[in-house]
Image (tube, rainbow, N blue to C red):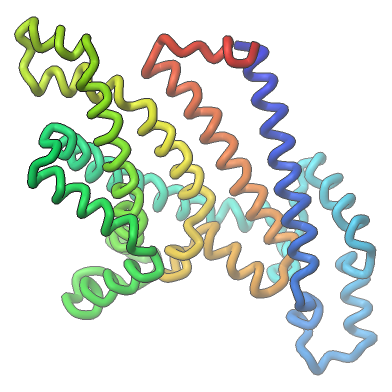
Length: 310
């Protein structure tokens, strides 16, 4: 187990470092000048040079990257060029909104996907199966940038039930959570159906039925539990995406999370802020993937993480 933890930590650190360096270089290759964004086009050349020198933007890109990585090693994510505040403070202010949206979206997805996938598997080849998989196909095919405005149009503008955007009210999370949750539910439902169909053909399922267990008990205690590993894989990957900030959804609904912060930083050429957001997104992916491996072992004791790292 210890060898596995060490190897996973090392590989995760390499991945995060690679992502940070790649994004740093790409952001600096994008056309646009943050100094001009801050001072405006009418600023004098002397003022631009002075600000660029004060921000360290006059140095070579590799030198800037070295200073940034050195600061990270000391726990310093840098200072935002736009807000002139520590990036860590701004990220901590935005992170609760993203976590809230991610968790609620995940709950919505699970509530929809597990019953839908189970019904489809138990009624294979019947109308219920075709209906459930048809719904799943529609959900996968509809992108968030289309689903979001449609939900706003129906539930906010036509019916007036829910807020259009923002996070001022408790009900503000409903539409963005439905937008992300239904898309994720479509993927999960297909995975639940596929995994459950495979499990229900196993010998131990026939043995459980032969012992007189009800179909509900067989499905709940034997079928779904053993079919949960591939579902956990998808959940882990999608949760990393949600925690990283669903950029499109947060932008559509003006949800003040990491996703919207990333878009704002890119538009303003706020290099340190973009790097900070990417760092948080990368760490979210890595952390969720490691936690997913431990959930594997809890759900299925036959899995020994220590053997994988040996």
